[in-house]
Length: 135
Image (cartoon, rainbow, N blue to C red; front, side, top):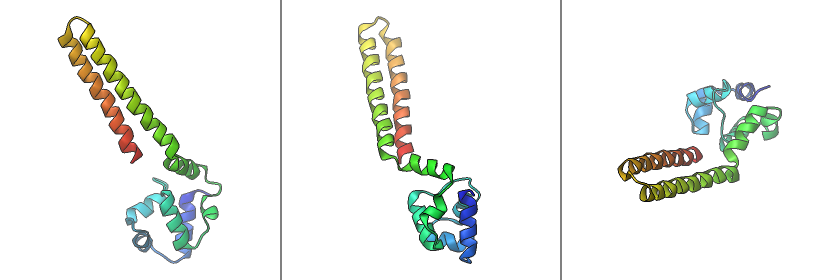
């Protein structure tokens, strides 16, 4: 059984509507609906709150749902996330240093300077993307 079906069944067993559950979990009714229809997954803090509200063990909610376990692993693996962010910072700095070095030592500096600016902009955008993704 997937997490959505388990959440819906546990909520119904407690006699709560999606609106009532949402109020007690401090989320919107649409969020509860999305969880139950598996359009999105709750984070680990919400799973703990759901477990308490519905009086269902975490093991009962999570066991056997590979997609939910994968989601929780990806969203709570701080080391993996930090390594990707660190790699993005290093890549950004390397690209900027190499491009500025090329702009200084190669002829046709106006064209190369424009390329340096574009590459720095792209690598910085990637870095910002990684930071926002981490948040």
